[in-house]
Amino acid sequence: MANVHQRIRSDHATEIAEDYVEAIADIITRNGQCRANDLVRLFDVTHATVNNTVARLVRDGFVTTEPYQPLDLTSTGKTLARKCRERHEVVRAFLLALGVSDATAIADSEGIEHHVSQETLIAMKQVLDTRSLPDGV
Amino acid sequence: MANVHQRIRSDHATEIAEDYVEAIADIITRNGQCRANDLVRLFDVTHATVNNTVARLVRDGFVTTEPYQPLDLTSTGKTLARKCRERHEVVRAFLLALGVSDATAIADSEGIEHHVSQETLIAMKQVLDTRSLPDGV
DNA sequence: CCTAAAAGTTAGCCTCGGCTAAACCATGAG
DNA sequence: CTCATGGTTTAGCCGAGGCTAACTTTTAGG
Ligand SMILES: [Mn+2]
Ligand SMILES: [Mn+2]
Ligand SMILES: [Mn+2]
Ligand SMILES: [Mn+2]
Image (cartoon, rainbow over the protein chains, first blue to last red):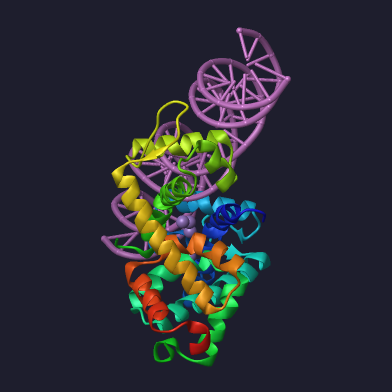
């Protein structure tokens, strides 16, 4: 990835796929299944948008669908979901440790997670492991 | 901003404008002027893309142009640039304080900056002000 | 002063990720 | 059994932000 800005663009290209597979996995865990309508409510977009996005996820091998059936993740999709959920959780916990409110940690982590490199993720984990930040500062 | 994901989408909508005005201000500071070609090199996109993007910035009141002349920022553009440069710098310094490499701090901050709320920014500043993180952890 | 190279512009294309509107299917209440 | 309702799909639109290719203007060297 020669250029910094190229990486940002590539982060953004995968961002929606990451959020969707993570959401689908979470909803399946919570409800036993995930319907398109669950994603409509979660992301606050229209049916048509979810349909288009899911079609791309199917095309890219993350999701399988049958007409009028709940969504399923492929094993690739499950792997990506697991990775994203863990990364997201680290970022959220790190922001909390930084001392911001719950609502802010939830909101900011949703965007930040996609731009955190492996190196930064490890640095965040280290802070969480050794000491909670608010006392440490 | 009712929904978390709506905020992410709105962050992304302003992100390119933010990066461009920040870059234009920086290049003017460094070189005395900013030409489209400087942006081509910086962002690693084509002339045509810079042209399209700059046209949107003009439309939105951040930039003024004359044919074949260097770009200029409006006062709105300058204000936005100042705000973005400061926020960007806080995020970069914070990542450095977290102990990551220079290259990673530069790369990650470029994406993260656009998703950092005022509350999180203040929390980061506080860490930077009171103590450098690497010893503190 | 001419002309080649560099810078800038324009036209036309693409995908992504939004939207509305309309059709389609499945199902539970009556 | 029918049918209203709600979930789903499809068609068709849009703007952002990329691209290539062709053209024009400016600038610099010889
Ligand atoms: Mn996210
Ligand atoms: Mn920036
Ligand atoms: Mn940026
Ligand atoms: Mn982003």
